[in-house]
Length: 444
Image: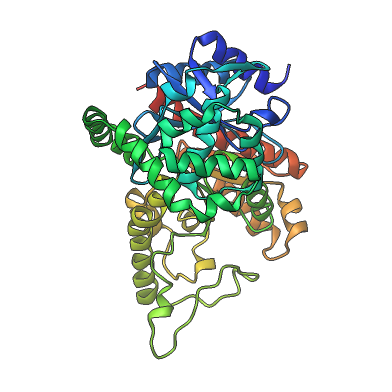
């Protein structure tokens, strides 16, 4: 049985009153970028329970639950370690809205004459026709493909229903567009059609609906969109040659389906530029790579202390104003190296101060959600990059592994294996962590 066949079997058995809004022709053989469903007579808790059951029965992880608006929820599910981009996104709506137009179409309207298609419910013929017109008016992206769909749905006798919904003038425009097979009619009369949809919204958006939505946004939206950040931050640490670049590139593909984008940072948030940038007489930009990490000349002690404290400020302020914002936007934040590199090798950052400084200040530095230490035999690492002698590589490996005794979210990954296996292991850890955080908010 195909994945979507099992998904809709579970939804049907749950008793949810729903219908798929669009893209049903490609299902269940294909999985669209998102599956839009209108529903009624179900609570948020009911939807949580259904989605968790879908995940359980199909060995999937619920990696995102996003509260979009009142009665509007998005869930993203993934396999624990997909080999490439994978996303099963389920969107549930009670109403069709966009911007300042609320309740343009109600679930009751779309579900009134729903019909069974394969193993899923879809709207009745006229209900789907009306939905397409409303949706395209809200999005302003009517195409020839949408017109062809309207032509197959339209029947004589629909004029009266269209007139009741959209008004006589817009009803005549729609009928003309369908009978002449001219998509340009929609574009030429877009403002008129959109205004008729707005009038439908005004009729549907009662005072009680306004109060419920305002109360929901005030008491539910902040904790589920602001305080519960839907993104994740991960840091990768290792000696040069252990495979950071390969792994970061790989997970940017395998994990991307569970996030709304990937943000890459080198070492710190970079809310502030490097200290040398602010030297107006001789400004210098910060390097993002170092092919000779121990060939640099360290700064003097005073300059080292000033630069160290300045960058600590960047970690603190930058996390609040950049990293946390990225996570609120449901993004995966990846750090190539992080503050904890200081514990291992202050010299590569041109400091002449001891790593004890870094350990003393570690309590005020924001922690990533996951810290990966990539490890491999010293001779393997040296074979990949001969930037440091084997003895120094061995020392660094020992120091990096000690981080596991300090931070419980440190995961040591052996990179002395096929890169697909390594990327799969890291992907699974990231998605399981994301699913754990998502399930916590679903169970509250």
